[in-house]
Length: 162
Image 1 (cartoon, rainbow, N blue to C red):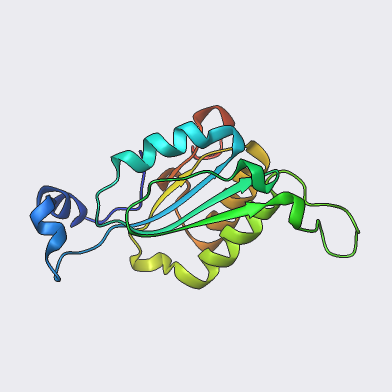
Image 2 (image 1 turned 120 degrees about the horizontal axis):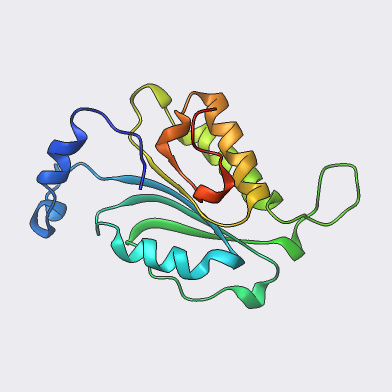
């Protein structure tokens, strides 16, 4: 999986272990993860592979509240469920929230506040549908995140340099 890296990332990876995670001086790995109802199994598999010391956000867009399920994420990560049925669409349209719209809004707002592109090592994993993922990739790249450092479904063709 791709992620933002610096020359020091390999060193941190080598030092990573359960005992290192318990140290107060241990560098926490920040994650930004997105998913929707079509990628819940992929999300669970990804979350199972993360270090227990991971921090960051998981945004999951679902069509309605009945889709919400128990998700096991590292304790320092915040999981946010985005219920499309409870959200409005584009301002002024009176329409409901389209697929990918709630996810793109939430992630771009979070990225604007939390990412410092110059020295950021956030690992970005975008799962789910094309529309929300494309909007998120465009926003992150516009912020200065390298396209190739974003992990998104390969079939979308969003993360390779054009």
